[in-house]
Length: 529
Image 1 (cartoon, rainbow, N blue to C red):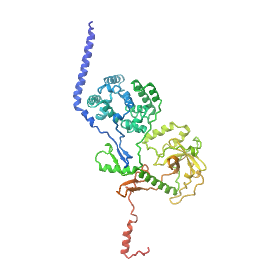
Image 2 (image 1 turned 30 degrees about the vertical axis):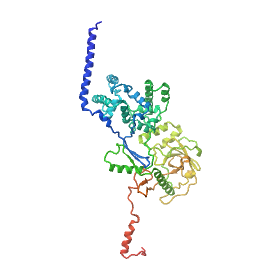
Image 3 (image 1 turned 180 degrees about the horizontal axis):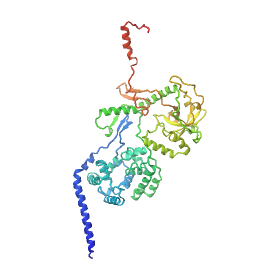
C-alpha cells in the first residue's frame, strides 16, 4: 500500500530534521571538544581537604578549612545511599553513556512550555563535568560543554569511579562537601552508619542544599526525603514496608561541628600559625595532617588543673552577681525537682555557627513542653564558655535552687555548690557568707554553672568566668617537647595565648643591676633605705 503524498513529505522532513540535528550536534562536538580541558585530567583530581592537627596519640586537636570533606571510596558507600542518589538524580545512570536524551528532551519541553528551567536534564556524569571543569552559569553553551565533557569522562572512567567522584565532590550544605562529610555534619556518624531515612535525606540535598536543608528547613527536607523514598520503591531499591518505615522516621538531623578529641585550642592555633609560615602551599585545602608532641591525657589534666585553680581563686574573691535578670512574673511555675530527679545534660556542647545554633534552639523549643519552652526562650541568646553553661533559675528554695539549661533539661543546685558565693565588695573584700540560697539567687536570674565530680555522679556548681587568667606549659625534661599547654581559661572567651604571646614583666631580674650600681656608689648590704 502506497503512503499518501503528504505522509511521505512529512517523513522526509522528519528524517532531514533528525539528520540536521545530528549534524549540528556532531559539528558542535568537533568545535567544542578541542577547546575543553581533557577529561583524563579528572584522574588527577585533588580534593580540597582541611588542615587537621593531632596529638601524639592521634587524637584531633583542631581542624581548619573552609570545606569539610572526608573522601571515601565507592566500596565504602552503602548500596542504599547509591540507590537513593540515583532515584533522586539520575535513574538511568548505569544505562546511558553520560547523556540521557530522554531527560534532555523533557527539560527542553518544560522550558518551552513554562518559559523557565524546571529540571536541567543533567545526568550525574554531566554534573561531575560541571563541578570539576565548568562554572554554574545557566547558559546553553555551558550545557553543550557539559555534554561533550560527559561523553569524554564516560570513556576514561567507570560508572563506579564517576559516582565516587560525584559523592565526594558535591556540596551538601553547612560547608559539607561529599556524602561522608554531610553524614558527619548532620548526624555525627559515618555514612555507613546511617539508616535508610537518613541516607535519603542526604540524597535529597544536591538539588538545593539550602532549600532542602534538614536543619534550616526540616519540613521541606522531610517532604523531599519522602519523595525520594517513593522513587526508591518505584525503582525496586526498597519494598513497600521498608519505604513506609523509613517515611515514618522523624527528622533527626542536627548540626555536629568537627569535635576536637582534645581540649587544646590554644595549641591548635599556635601550630596553625607556625604551619602557615613554614609551608608554602595552601595548608587549608591540601589535606595536611600535623602530629604534635601534645600528650592528650596530660593536656586534659593541665586544662582541668588550670581551670580548677582559677575557680578556686575566683570563688575566694566573691560572687559578682548574675549575667542578667529576666522578668518572670508571668512565667509558668515549674514543679520542684529533687536531687534524684536531676537530668544530666552534657558537660560539653558543640560550639555551633550562629545560623545553625539559632536553628537548633528553635527546633529544641518547638519540641518542648510549652511551659518549659517559655523558660528556654529566655536564655536562647546565651553562649557557653568552655565548661561554663548558661542556665536560668526557675525556683529558689531555702538551701537549693532549680535551674534550666538551653536544651530544656533541668537540674538542682545543692547548698554546697551555692554557699561559697559571698558578694564581692571590691577587689580586696567580700561580704558576709550567705545564710540561704535566696541571699545569692533570685527566680529569673541567668547564671553560669560548671560540672564538678565524676561523670557518673556529676553535679552542677554555681560559677562565673574567672576575672583572673593563667597559663601553663608542661615540658618533657628528656627532650624539651611540649606535652601540654594552655594559654588561658578558654580559647572561646579569649584567643590570646598567655603561654607564648604575653610580654613578661621584668620581675626580680632587675635587682642585680640596681644593687651593683648601689654598691659602686657606697652602699653596702647593711644599708637601710
